[in-house]
Image 1 (tube, one colour):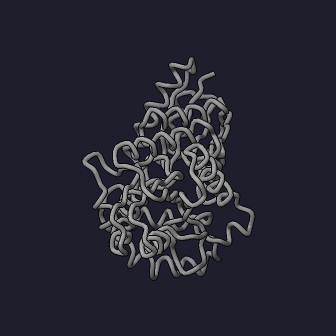
Image 2: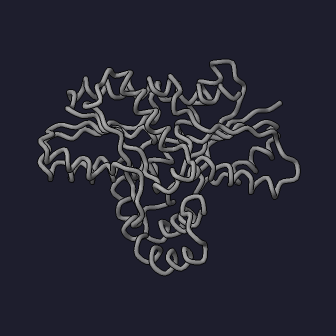
Image 3: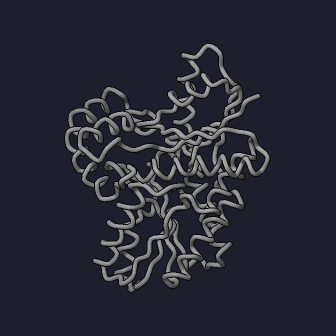
Length: 321
């Protein structure tokens, strides 16, 4: 039977322009998994306020990280898919690996159409998110389910729910930290910044917060860090509701004002560098830390196409294949 792996990530606009960013945000923010408030009220807020003011600001931020090849997230995900296929082939797995984005292009439904048209009978859906969250992992499954509703002959499907405690994933993170320490020296504190979610989602039973903490504990243990030498925090807060805490930028500012001079920041929840890591952390958080009295801020890149990072994706895929 022909088998394929579909590596799925969040997505980004097609271009760093207000128009393209507005289309992307309209799709992203209308997902009920992402914003869990009554649809009628949110429609008014989204179309009358958010989509009138945010696209231009977001487009300007995307422009600061855009590459000649396009969005960093899309570029890295394409490379990961190619490398994943090669490594699986070396392990004796005769599979085809494609990539898709939950929002924007290439869309999940379009890639599934292509795979079905090419005769693939078994498809593993591999979200790139290490930690399970309804707003990310479950949303990918929703997109696949909608594709199933309009498809007559369905392939066999299997879903990965994450790999937050996969030993090779933890090792890949550790190797990236050790590499940074060797190059830039070791900071006084290692901040592990994960994407934030509203606190309400935790109370409703979402395991995301606990899985982020588990990743943080395992990485700290692998590096031999004491509790005072690392911190788990959450970034990308949106709106006025209370989100998972501590918030990354205020934490950095507070520690700098308390005398912290050198900090290392890694974003373990992002399999590939994107706007949230390159602009929000490597630029904005850096400026906030230095402005509060810090002297040295080192951002440790995402796993991207590193050998250790691809090994972790291979392990996540092979568990299901």
